[in-house]
Length: 181
Image 1 (cartoon, rainbow, N blue to C red):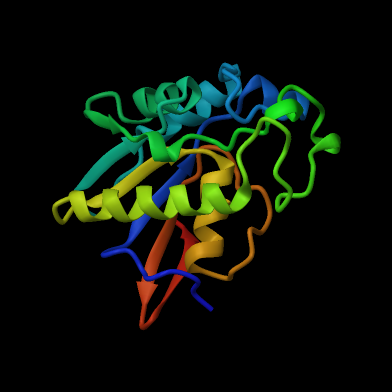
Image 2: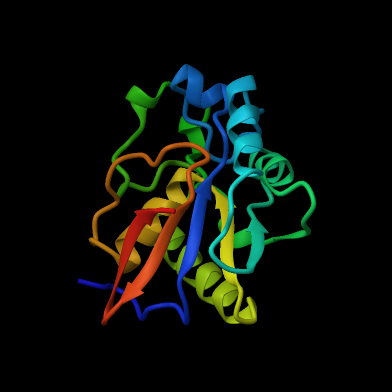
């Protein structure tokens, strides 16, 4: 069941390439962590992808997403959108993933899940409306993809999405489905 009105068109979400925090199973959230060599290679591999239509590229302002966008789309301009930033995990930033609180809990000094859901809803609907008929390709974070799943597909955040893998959120009838692109 969809929890929010559907965006005006299909869109594609890409989680940044692997980071040092991903490799070490650390909560990064809004902490600036670099891409690993594997993450840079994952992002470069996207530069060889053939897209089914003209695209409009947007990225989180966080360095790992911008670095991924530059490597994945070396000849193309992309716009930054603050609504695509990762969730702030507050006092849990830098701790092992095993210590991450429940998603629905608001961490001390962090962002609440419902606040993030609304931020993602606003960002993606704004981007879709502004993409002028091109497929919006958004380079962001795991939390953004999970929020989009809750908003428009299964209503469940699901498993952590893979790094540097385009996921198409496609409208079918009155719902949206997520599939690898």
